[in-house]
Image 1 (cartoon, rainbow, N blue to C red):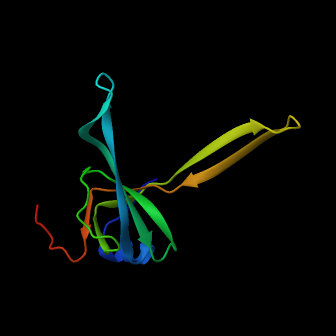
Image 2 (image 1 turned 180 degrees about the horizontal axis):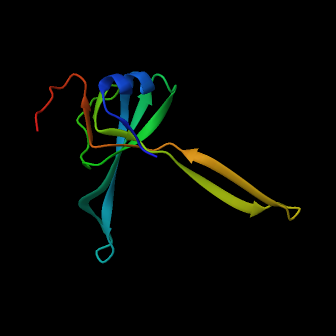
Length: 122
């Protein structure tokens, strides 16, 4: 189930003020040379959200590290909330079957920028 947060107002209503906490990029690894290459496989940004009273991780599809100062307010392009559930089953010490499940909060966006930065037309 994907929920598109299409407008600034929707993002503000759901997340509140969103601030930039950092960025993590994953790079391709060359098995033969046994070293990291310059090819970026994925970019994940860590954001603080006022209304969630927690931080979220957002996968950025452009794979570019955003040029946003730490604790700067963030604006999104194409933000989508795409949660999914995971479940595990196991036997406890008494041989009884047990299960547990959790919802994984997943956010994806095309790109993001500093709110104070000018909007670049495509």
